[in-house]
Image (cartoon, rainbow, N blue to C red; front, side, top):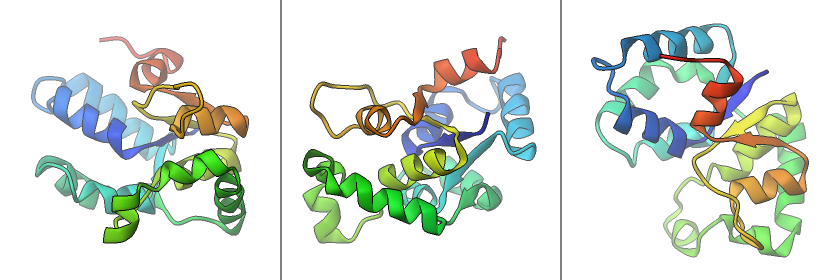
Length: 155
C-alpha cells in the first residue's frame, strides 16, 4: 500500500515525535520513504513553508516524495469541486491570498494510485473534510495511528 501524507500529518509527526527522542520511528519513516510506501504531493510541499522551522528543512531534503499531479488526478480534482459542499475545501482566505491548498490533490493522488490518504482531519457529517471527500470517492483514508497500525509499527 502507498500512503499519501497530508501536511497536517507531517506537521503532527514533527511537532510530537522529535527526531532525537524517537529514532526508531524516524528510521522506519525514512525506510518507508525510500521504498515508496510514503509519498505526498507538490501542494503539500508548498503548504509546509507556513509551518515551523524543522519541517521545511526536512521537506527540502526529501523533495522527491512531493509529486506533481498527473492528468488523471486533475480530472478528480475537478470532480471534487463539482460537489457543491466540497468547494469549501478552498477557504475564502486561502483563495484571496493565493495560498496553496493541498487537500484535493492529496485525495486525487491516493485515488489515482489506489493508495490511502494519511491525515489528522476527522470525518464530520456534511463537512468538507478530507475523510468525507475520501468516503464520497471511495478513497482509503486514515490518520497517523491508523497508518502505524496498518504497517504494524510498534516501538
